[in-house]
Image (tube, rainbow, N blue to C red; front, side, top):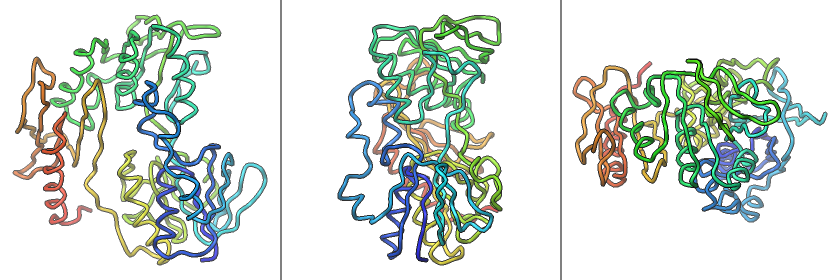
Length: 393
């Protein structure tokens, strides 16, 4: 290959570029990013960056020396608007084209928005620019904040806002947040963290609309109530960036459809990170974004699928001074048992706990709150057990 183009200056895009060089690719490397920034770490945006404990320099994933080592042409602040049907030309929104022999799609996802989201005081939190705007607004004294969505981004943002002294209400349409990820028992335990921190959690009701003319003044709930708000933060999930691929021959369905090796129906096109649906699953986790590029690049350079991705899913979340860590696969019907530590009034007791999920006598997942070392041991055991299991098709 004479030219490989990485579309997306994201975490997964950066890792793919590094893998290309480490796996021996010595041709032209082009990295296209729609943001003007070099790749940065997103998890701190809802935590230390939002609270002012970290600055932008600490978010950087690369430095000038590292960027130079990649010997890449960086096209930042440039959006890809199309890929030709053969996957050989990337069309840019400024009219330019990039002829290429291989493509790594790493365009990630964008935050979902609500109608009325253009009112002043309404924020999403996905990008550095999002976090800059929200952080600036949070410095103006105590505010009434409504966070829509009790998932990880919503919970982390609520935690950060509460730590800054704001009055925070979290609205979650489901009976409990995080049930699909953790199951009802452990979701209830994590939901109790909100209560213990003095954050109001309203569940089982959605948001019918936002109130205000120029600036937001409240959130109207589907049950008829209206919550007054100076700031509304919308954390209702993300949509994969695939619109620019319309007209290509790639299969798209809530992401770019790939085989177990991150390879699309065009062998010279692979996808990684939040935009990739690998083997039927799209995982918006940091670990997926860093693990998939090694396999995807190996297959891209080979011109076919020679390696596959079968990691044990892992994610973490920092909320209200506690670290939640989860590894494995939860399915409805799994039994869960706390094997270390305990609960206190439905919330993690001091020192946290470690829980195991089981199905048919086999451990399927592990969850911990503030027990990092026992969790890492349990995660290693789970990874070994998973490697010994036959592939599920």
